[in-house]
Image (cartoon, rainbow, N blue to C red; front, side, top):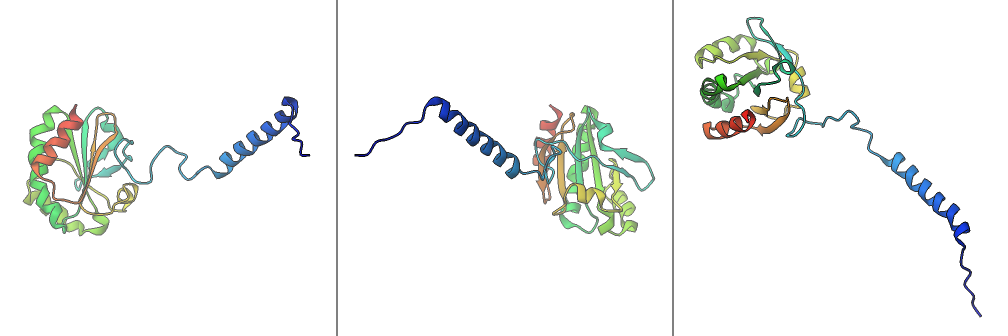
Length: 184
């Protein structure tokens, strides 16, 4: 005849503790430790924008983190890029329309991929009145994990990215909608 031996509560407690400790050890060992800083691998909506400090062709410096309190459009572009050229008039128009409401546009030329001598004539040709910054080393391209030109980051007054637009050209309607969102 078969008899089943049942463990008492006192006998089960060490077994429960052993299972609990093994589970906790597994969680610690298998945890993804690749992202312990609170940032993401690529800038995306809902996360703080990577800081940048660059200069204009005239030598005036801008630091993104110093612009908190403003809505900021960071646009990564190059003079040789057809969609970049196509969207610049719309960006300029939206900048002129919204700058008095707190919009700042930082147009970051990927100078390390561009001809630096073409930047100033480009600014003049398109009558750009917002800051055009030079990424001469590629540091901003790397921080923003540049995949395509143009790439645009709509950043609210807290420094948080609200929208990322990869590629272009962006239309006035898209720009207006995204700018209205970050100005709220």
